Figure 1 (cartoon, rainbow, N blue to C red):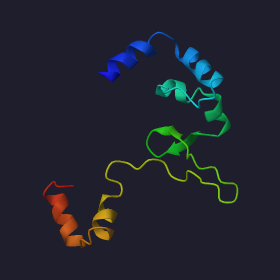
Figure 2 (cartoon, helix red, strand yellow):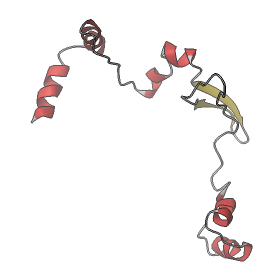
Figure 3 (cartoon, rainbow, N blue to C red):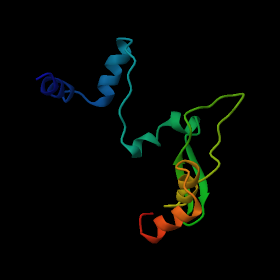
Figure 4 (cartoon, rainbow, N blue to C red):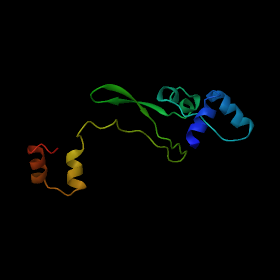
Length: 112
């Protein structure tokens, strides 16, 4: 019952108008952006949140950068997203403790 009331109320003003009213009332607020607007935000650019990185099969990819910007230990994006199945065997071995025979059997049976 509360949700329809709030929806009706919130539709009466634009996002910019609500943000202005919140700012005037000293209420912290920000918009919920669609992805196209997220990376158009000046703060995102200022914080270096859009990272471009070479990918082994599709050229350059654009990725969301790390939200942590620490001066003494800055985070870095070192690797592109993995290819499908790229780390499967390593995970089966190191996390599940499977040996080469068990992993080969999983591949042979179409499990992985």
